[in-house]
Length: 443
Image (tube, rainbow, N blue to C red):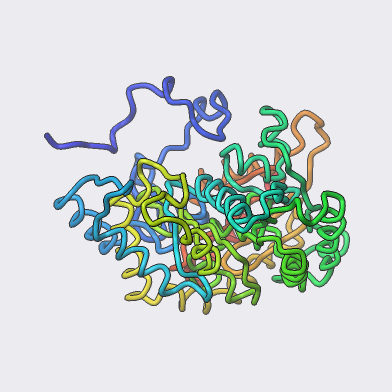
């Protein structure tokens, strides 16, 4: 039987779409059926430049042959194998490949299925680590306002996006939040890391003493807050967080689901920012979005703390049916080969300055109140409308019109996001900003 996945669906009614206004979408669905390189294609074959890397994840571009080759080779051998007290070579090979490119002192990785699960894994490891060290009172977890850490109960709890939390109540206990770092008055249109705001990290000291240092387990932040509008850290901010965590014995967790795997031209943004956390989470680009996978990286100190009991006892009572799935592990290997063979991360480094110049050319366009960038990431903040029932009408309308004109850009709240595949060139950048400028003139 030959499958054809380009034909129209029989019905759009049954699928409850994630993070989507169902009725609004289904009145005028934006459908894509094929992808290659920097482009998606709609059912009529129209080319759509992907300025979002799907959803921050297709970092190496679409339809990479070696990734497909690796997955196919694994599938022909074996479709599934458990990693609960069994193993298969592919997952160990994938882990070794990743750790070889991680900054020191990261030595071990725990696999899950998504960024949300990678975060929940990180939080559980942090709590268990302190208990193993005889400091079981450390139960408080500190996140940050406007932070996004997935949609698990743990991730939503430490996350700080009100519209993600409001429907579900208080969620987990023992949670607190730092204030966000967005300072529009002082930092509008800053290029890269803004000059003002390092002092916002000092609030961590206040929260620590509010709860007592011996009650706090970990602090989790995105190095660049992504889903809230791409907020780069102020200069010195991450360094200050690291100093405070070290002083009080807290673990510092970097959620690099967005910033990891090449967005800054390296495996992790640790090299870019010069700040080393204790735990790092990744997902998305780690398999180029081809197969779902999340990863939680820990230092040797943390891993070894779990290895002191009897050998026959499970050290961490945690895991998922698909942790280390053979096809996902193969996708990691294929992705790593693709990145290395095509020197994609080196290309990303070379494109950072042209990308910055391109997105900041939007300054002065109608309704643009801020442009923020860091690495190959950018947020474009648009003015709110006077309609209290629909203040973020502009980014939604712009996003839909851009799609009609052959450009995929995501939006949330007042912001448009640019996170293109890292194979982007200056011609793509020109097309992106020119199309956005043209659409903004029509509002």
